[in-house]
Length: 67
Image (cartoon, rainbow, N blue to C red):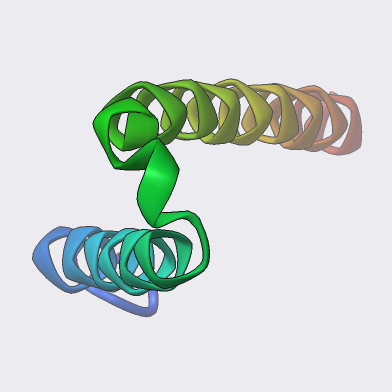
């Protein structure tokens, strides 16, 4: 069974949103442009951590349902 989107489409979806967000950020905060990559990295790391936590919660619930 596969995800509704294949991995490449899912990655592209996330990257397109990151790109759109960074463009909007630059328009609103052009004085912080040199900090953008650090802000993006922090937000991306937060996203990955949140996704990992949600997956682990899903995994526990799934294991409980099949036990």
